[in-house]
Amino acid sequence: MKCSWKLFESVGIPCNHCFSIMKAEHLQHIPAPLIMRRWTKTTKNGDNSDTMNNVGSFEISELVRFGALTTYCSKMCYLASKSVAAYTELKEELARRTARIEELMTNASIHTESSGKRAHDHEIVKDPKVVITKGNVCHSKKKRRNDRQCGQCREVGHTKRTCPFA
Image (cartoon, rainbow, N blue to C red; front, side):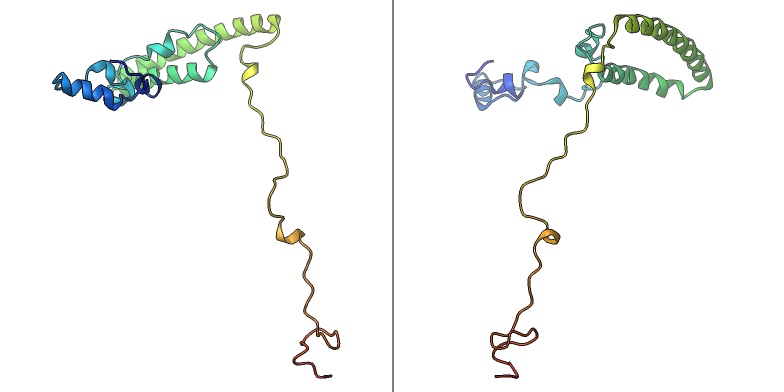
């Protein structure tokens, strides 16, 4: 179902036209293509193929790859912690894999140093520049107001109405 509003294509929510068509067709359930995966109960089940298909590309940041690997390892670690045998097997396998990855990283660092710039140097986010804001000046910077003086004798502490010299 498509509509000229393109609400489903832009936001991911079917518009009222789609529901009118479903009512006219006497549909009992909303069709599966109209339900985005993030709104279902099975959102975290399965594998995130969108993220994992492009793991080799340089466009994906290091943080996204780290998040995907963490998601995969989280369930494995949870299950392995339930028994001692699974724990020891996973611990030994992780030690072997860690040594292999460190070996790959030393080889990769030799190649990146020879090529010059690292792949993720462009992703560094720095602190913003500090600027003076517009608006009302701080009260401590304002000029201090003078105390009231008498209009008759110009002394501080009383007014013209209560002046002792008048």
